[in-house]
Image (tube, rainbow, N blue to C red; front, side, top):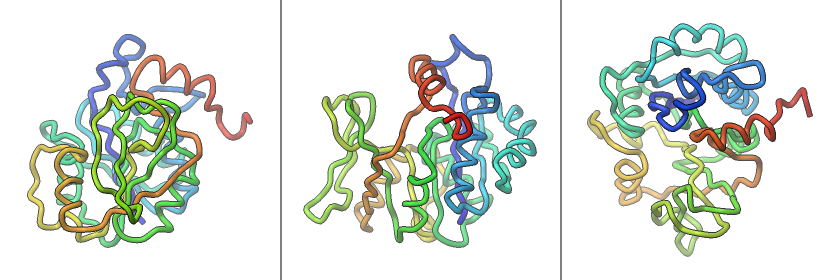
Length: 230
């Protein structure tokens, strides 16, 4: 099973603490992305496609080493102009079409291998839902009576609950008729897909964090120690 890893973001909020491409921020002696890829490999993913734009040359320079560190065969697709999370996937699917069901994930988000394994073992289209104490920083998920995804809710909802972890599984045919364009996964592609197909919500209760802010990067550094350190 292939994973498309979205690592084209500008990482604006991290500029005060690092000059690296966001996914390549060194933590625990390795690029953050190397640990993400290692979790994918442990979950049974067979290959990864890195979807890059901002500072893509840094990703290209480290591609072979990232593959070696994670044990995952890697290739790379570069966007000539920023296409957003949805457009990055569409562009990658055009360049390297999926032959079967596949994963999509944000390169700045960490979950344990178990979360990816839950997605790999599922079927059809799915989104990983993480349980957090405060949903205000994340997009929440609205479920229908059958427990499937009904809608994605904007950030700002207070209190504990399920949030969109930014990890998806799609069938090979999910976006074959969708033209490549700049668009958002959350605001464009998923709402359109929901009008046509069922999207399963996979409940994940393990560790979850995104490193998009200096505060969350610091928390990851001190609380999410490598498995060999636990």
